[in-house]
Length: 308
Image (tube, helix red, strand yellow):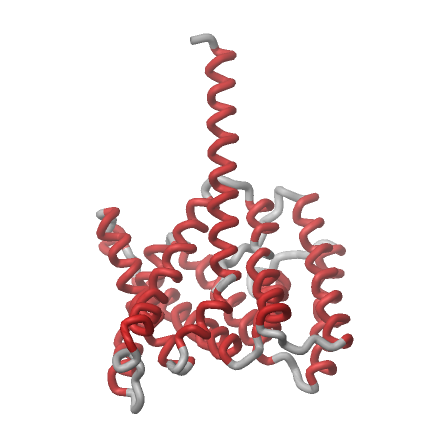
C-alpha cells in the first residue's frame, strides 16, 4: 500500500473517530439536559431519599461496569492523598446533586439551569484564586459581565439566586478537586459513591417514611434507574473527551443547561419576567465572550465539567 493511501486511511479513521466522539458528547449532554423530566417522576420520594438512592445505585452501576471491564488494578495503586481529595469531592457532589434534585422538584428548574450556565465562569475564577492562573482581558470581561448578571438576577428574584450559586460553586470546586485527583471518571465515581454509600443506605432504610417499597414496581424501577442514568452519560462523556478537542467539548457543554432552561420555561411553565430575561441575556453574553476567547486561543486550558 502506498504511503499516500495509508495517510488517507489514517485521516479517514481520525475523522470517523472524531464524529463518534461528537455524537457521544451530544448524547451525554442531552441526557444531562433531560434530567428535569426524570426527577419529578420519582415523587412521592423526597429530595433526600432520591439523592440517597442515586448514590446507592450509582455505586452498583459503576461497580458492574468495572466488573465487566475487569478493571480493579487501580485500587491497589490508589494513594491516600488521592482518596482523601476524592472523599471531599464526594461531599461537594452530594451537595450539588441534592440541590439540583430539590430545585427541579420544587419548581426552580430555570434557576438550576442558571447555575450550570455560570459554572464555567466560577471555574475560571477558581483558577485565578487557587491555581494563580492569569486571565486575558476578554476573560475578565466575561467574568465581570457574569457578576453583573448575578446582581441583576438577585434583584429580579428579590434574593440572591442561592440555588444557582450553590450549584455553580459546589460543582466548580468539585471540578477543581477532580483536577488535583487526576483519576478517570469511572474510578472516581466509584470512590465518591463508596464514601457516601453507608450514610445513603442508612437514610434509605431508616427514614420515617421510605417510598422504595409500597408504591409499585414502576416507582422502585425508577429509583434504581437513577444509578444507570448517572453512570451512562459519564461513560459517554469519557468516550467523547478522548476523541474530540477540548474546544469542541467546551461548546457542547452548554447543551445541558439550554435543555434544562427550555424544560423549565416550556414544559414546567416557570415564571420568567423581563428582569430575569435581562440577567440571563447577560449571562449568555458572558458565555459567548468566554467561548469565543477559548476558540481563538486553543492552546490555553479549557475548564470542562460534567453536568449533574
